[in-house]
Image (cartoon, rainbow, N blue to C red):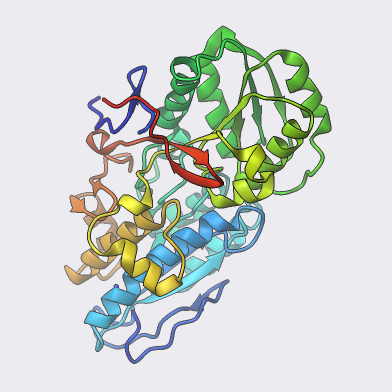
Length: 390
């Protein structure tokens, strides 16, 4: 399988349109963020499905804002024929997701879903979207098995953890040269799956493992801290999301552990630094099957900052592209969910973050796979300039 290598470690990539005459609002659980017009292509709706509240909400907000920017810009150019974005706040919960997905499919104007954002909620919501025949593009759910269920509506706009996991593992081996590694995961579909891929690469270098509670259910990690500090490990891989990772890193530093925390895209957010504190987070390595949003092409970076008064975050640019793929399909006359899903199987779309072509399983074409490594430096998550280049 040919991969576009952006930054390579051990053969795996490691550094590696809306409002005019319509009012927008940041509402959730099926509320609209724009108004609709009339006509064959008009009055159609897309859904954002993912966390807007909860312990990992930052990642979802990044995605929702990227998607909304694309639809805002589309509507500015099509004032007489608007597309509506409806937001469904899953809270990142696999338990909340099924009921929310049923709300989506009951709205017959919705013909495409941007999301679900996380892997766990994808596992519980995607079968409902499949049964209803509503196509989805997830900008961020990376669990590999999501594409192995025979779902015809599933499409993933980033690489899965079969790329990200080995990238992280090879970074630990080849850049950090850690001989002893401790692996912790939060028992989520995403976190545990990613950790398993890392362990496969590290093999005997994994001296011990532990599991913690995810979804912000745990604040005291003293038992895990004790295990890590007594293990002799000089590196820790954490499979999960940024809030827990930050608290664990903070408590490890407080206990005197000097090793390096490495984690995946679920931790690749300023919220990690906030939870850990600048000093504790310094030097942490965070991977992502995405390029830095700051490197997105065209006017996206400036447009996002102008719209939201913050810089684009992890997956903001991918979500922008996902929304524009749907909008291009609608413009081409694919005005039903069935037609739009068929269209996605033929798309070859050059966006601001990547070029998108999907396999018959809904995976991103292998030629477009990218994984980057980021490093916490002076309190900011930035591309890791120390990682070797291909």
